[in-house]
Image 1 (cartoon, rainbow, N blue to C red):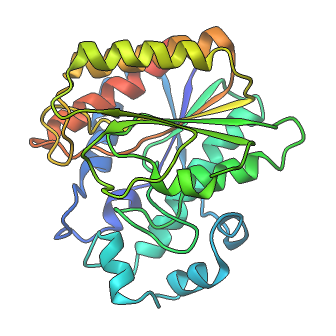
Image 2: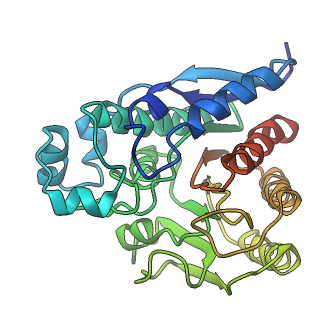
Length: 305
């Protein structure tokens, strides 16, 4: 048994809960789980089953009416269209609650001191606002986890480090002006969302930005963040900055993405803070590029615990 296992939350409904005809890489979660399990001969990953988030947990962030209508399959067609993932199956509700529940469990794992790092093999649903979803995101798991963590006496300030190629617009708006949560987003300038919100710190990259420029910028960001006070870190680790990503406009290589992760994990180890990982986006063509980069991400974690 390895000294440090990485707790990773997953449920098969992450893939099976979506309609296979949806304009979304439905199989990526199950494909990634299969690949990680086949590679993890040393038992570095401790697989955990995601629970259902409660209505009360979701309503720490989201408006009661929006939550009620979603849970009862009453969203308007225009609201569903804004979210995507269509056509919706009846399992969309359970999938969303388990996706959120897995994120909460990972956060609770590090808050309890059971692990320095834990993760959810889905989520990072940073486009969801308090009263509506958007961009494949129904409930904002980052925001829900932050609000729940802040109920703990020893958590006063949280860093959300969002390295998805798309700005975390929902998260930015939810916590705008809230000094308890510091939102940082490194994203493509011309990527969705086309109407950006204001994070505490937004760093925009021009189209076709490659590894060198991206990694130099990340180094500068992490250096400045080292001088700030936080109690907990959320890492939104989307890999849609890959050059082969169908929805991204950057040109990062697989090796560049690996170096990105290593820099973040080294920085976390240096400052000694607990970290929860939210998987984020990845839409490469071929999808194997996304699977490979997420495999690199999750297999790297135990080396830094």
